[in-house]
Length: 337
Ligand SMILES: [Zn+2]
Image (cartoon, rainbow, N blue to C red; front, side):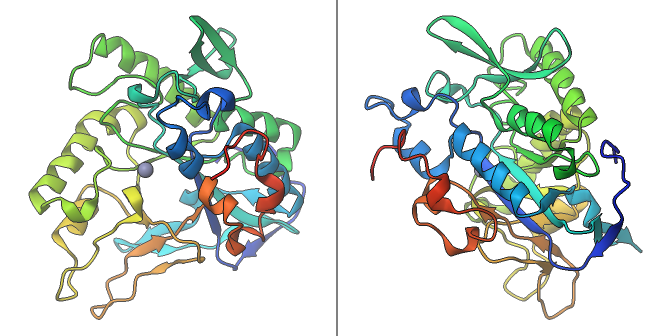
């Protein structure tokens, strides 16, 4: 792990369950995103948070003494079995993982309120690029990557070991705004080279990657064969870009680990064979443990609390230890529901 914060603060073994929050790409241009004629406006209002909401959340997490750790520090492999490992954090701090789903900047959403892509600028700094009214808007403050980078540079003890977050990506429409997929892609080689540059930079400054499947299908609706093909596409098209990852993040939080008899399901076995060791779902309760099963198979599962328009609006009680959803909610820009 990178050591950015100088480590003078004594650390302790954090035996409390590590919390994990996730959200999606941020709403970077709220006026556009929530405008009456935007076909995505209701989806954004449900599934996404705005850049200003994210900034308020970071500030509150910091004030509540959370600090970022890497999901890779929460487990290890012993005798071919993945087991939990206690993370260490500075005294007075609580461990937190942040992750971000669907970071592909789907071409269907272009120009509708999110950024177009993550880039590395001519000075080697992470930024975002978006075409706004025909001109490129290069920004350092309208996506989770750049906002978190900026926050940590001002508050290094929020990331005591240099860890930022986990980027959970699919492959069906490329990664990070680059059309790297094999299907219907022009200039694919160039897109791949550009994506690789951004990925290299992200890794250098403490981000890591997880698989969020290739096609973002409902796992339960796929046959075993279709699921196997999905994994193959990920291994062929996305893994060469982001590198091997042991973390699998279920689309829609839908999982199928055991079959009807309580054995490891075929689909789960494919995931294990593909090198995935820790599995992330979606749940507002804190859960990081082995899934209970009669054969005592150790399957390490971590739930993630949802931070989106819906949970903020509902003032979900599970969010209060982290931030006050009411105070975070951007009443000024969000349409009423
Ligand atoms: Zn997703």
